[in-house]
Image (cartoon, rainbow, N blue to C red; front, side, top):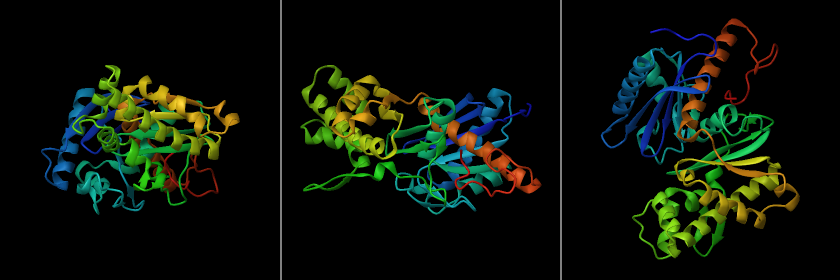
Length: 330
């Protein structure tokens, strides 16, 4: 088993609401994959041990050793130690714990944690539909709703590295109460919309799309209603940022054109015409690999930056005389 040269090889760990996806990646290519369901995991230690086992299995399969390990996680991690301090409602096992520190101890690898929406956005920026695009937004639709914004080919974050929370955009503050994009467009939001329209709440979003394809009126009405809310959110972003592209990813985006066509059809209701004519709405290209690729690249990027800082060498994001970039994940 050999170590890589050049950009390096990194393990990417994408922590979702129901499954942990693993990938061993190099130069935007996933060399080996793994998947860990939450069902048998009873503790934080179980999660860490299964990830380590998965990384070792991928290394054996690919015949390559990882140089670093990146974690895409919901919520926000403290930069100094990776402690998860916010946004872990969908993955309570991570609350107030540092998976990065635990995996560093168990593997000896350089580790880095990045918000899952930011990781997916970086995956699209460097390896997917965001290549060559200066300004775009990505919405990831799954157990929750996340994503990220890129302006000037750089991920938008605060000075503390915390990215925008796109799923928290309030789209309705009427009689039903304060409802966000995540309330409408997550898997749970789809089920709730289907129930309001008179359907069976047991159906998943993909099942609802299948029913719509078969002509079921309740399913069609549900998808139209959810697509309208997605278009509303994208219209806000396009009007504010003059975006070139709006990318839609995550498990629900697997529905493809039946969803995208409805979003495009309703976007004019929420977007200034001049800007509307310049923007395209398309599906994210990296699919379920987006978070893996973004996390892996983040780990390699931060490993290089850490090494450069220790030696005084400049890097592309840290020229001589400048401090590190705010987010450290570009």
